[in-house]
Length: 64
Length: 155
Image 1 (cartoon, each protein chain N blue to C red):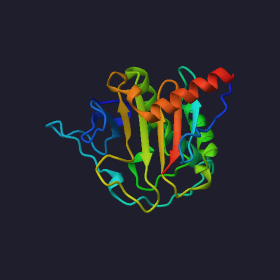
Image 2 (cartoon, chains in turn blue, cyan):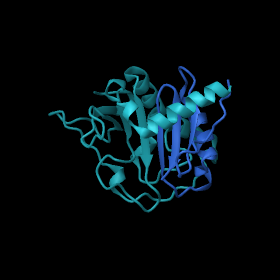
Image 3 (cartoon, rainbow over the protein chains, first blue to last red):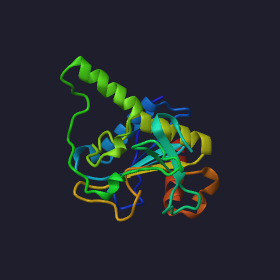
Image 4 (cartoon, rainbow over the protein chains, first blue to last red):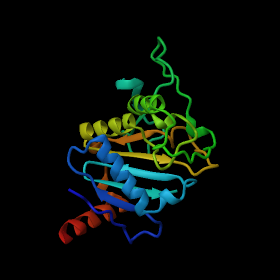
């Protein structure tokens, strides 16, 4: 099942969040992270830092 | 607590959440008295790394990279590539940690040219067990949960 990334508008910094499927594998987590850095533009900013949070339900990524 | 591939789970000495844990990959075996030797890479300035992880020059190099990916942490050096900051071994620790504690894991990497202001802040896997999370009190978690609900309703 494909989960489309979406952004949270309540905060002023760019960031993205995506649902994590139950029992996601390492490769699935890597793919979700890849989608999220594209969604919030970190992939175009190789010198940026980043914060990544993940729990059973979602993954959140924001640049520093 | 010792984990596979020389990873160790220890109490976070600077935890913002009570009961916070850190997962690090040890540089050397534990000493006889149980002390852990760990050279914190976040205390040195982050160096640029623009390498394309998909490229390799030979099959032998690809095999070595694949082997390293499954056993070594990407967080133990000061030139992390933000496109691929975590190896499969790192993601494995995060996945197991979140699953076993029903908690939240987070990783931070500083911008190039910056370093951490306190030990073990960046370049390590932080884990907050579910029972220690006060998610209802935190605006960021509230915002995330409300957007997740909104997203689910829209689909």
